[in-house]
Image 1: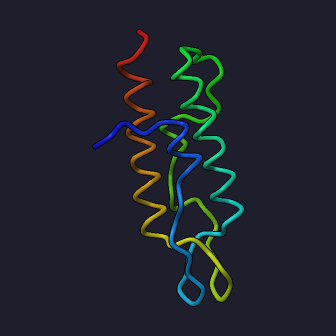
Image 2 (image 1 turned 90 degrees about the vertical axis):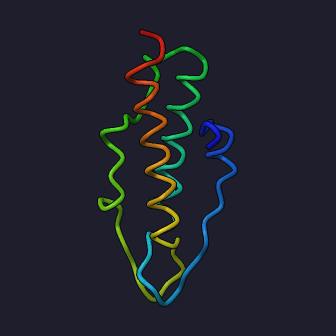
Length: 96
């Protein structure tokens, strides 16, 4: 698996769903911005600028919606887990 980077977060695309329950697009996009900011801080060796930690990444806390365009829950959950693991790596093993 390639290391998740801020650039990869900015380029992330999720499947859209309409009739199935999914995560609201604006909420996911906002979380992605925070993840990208945090990864960019770690990549620049500035952990003091981190805006979200691995502990804060809990997909089930994202609001869900149905009967409107949303992001597919499974693909978002998998991505958030990858982001959580990457941030945990930085928090626990890098720059100590």
